[in-house]
Image (cartoon, rainbow, N blue to C red; front, side, top):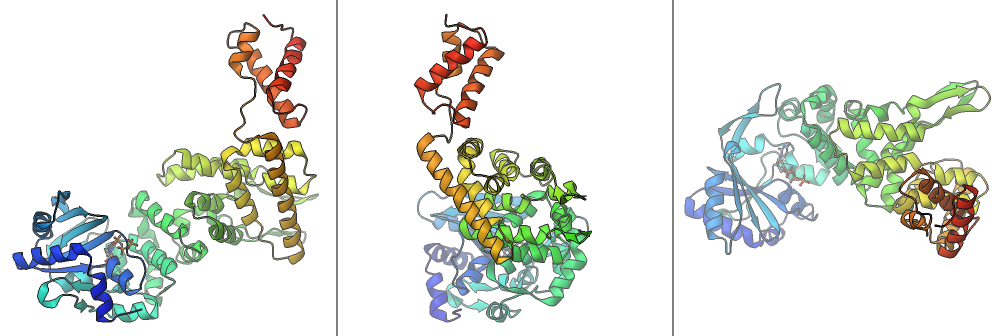
Length: 476
Ligand code: CTP
């Protein structure tokens, strides 16, 4: 971490800061850049596109002045109720706010706001590492204001609140999730007092909007090792309030000397494994939820031991409910997660039996566009600690993968459209849309998937004539 002046000056070379300086000096107000931009600059991380500016005075007045000075037409949006304004300039969003003192009522996130000094404003922020401010006025340009030893916490890798954590978290419970998210993103440790306070205040997250919770969950899932965040969520008792389905996977039962694995820790391992191979956050969701159907379907059978019969089907249904409860969009992303959960055991089941062409063809057909992601998920699902089994499962999996490549190259089966369409069947047999058309189409599909005929027009056409004949239908 560089805290030297040149480094800060370099970050402040961004053209927007020169305009803010001019505007602030013209109005005679102090202006500071604060929050994530300062934190990430000092950590030498890529700074995001949102930059937070605090004015000791009116944030809106400063924003208006900046907008006047900026070249070209720049959109300024004013949010009077919040006393904030936003300007888009080049690729960045500048968020302006007046320095304030805030306190929150017990049952809502809506603060009671009063104007304050810079220090008041720093006080009310979430973490010491997010309360660092750099002055933008000409006479003090680049000066770092760090009343809570945020620099030391950045060096030591500590997430700490400026005030008593009970006050900071109670003011805005989202910060409990933010603490965990930052800890996961930055590899920082949450200060013990803060950690205890999160556990004590965990109930307070119930007042948050689901959208904001999900935003943080997505950021945790986007980390290189999401398990670290989920373990913290669990230890602080937040997870059971957000995703009780995962908590239900915890524990190992034993009956007659037979044990099953702890599906909670297994799930977290799967999420980490998938995160090594894909940035796709929805695939990471699928990994997180792939076994949720195991809790409600768990049974002990004297003959076969522990079973989770139809857990993929039950799990897929639970995905819908979970997305709905968390107000996540019930769109194609949800369907994607649902389908992956539903199909999550298929490649492994194939691997355990003889890997026939028709089983592979069906897998390719059923998975369609999701095939590559499904295969990644299945590979990530191998978490056994037994080295022999680990090697065997991987070998089986590779056999399935090779077979998929071979069958695909030969049969062109992905995104399969039967070579004879429903329209053609209706035309040839002079039929209106009816059950028989569907029956003939399905029979062609089945014949191709079973490998009875190749995936080609002539063969499908001939098969169609034979099938129709057996149903008493003849070409018109
Ligand atoms: N902040 C806060 N409490 C919150 C959210 C934000 O005190 N619940 C303050 C912090 O000082 C934070 C700043 O507002 O640094 C900007 O918030 P935001 O843009 O959400 O986060 P960043 O810190 O910029 O980080 P990131 O973009 O990674 O979320």
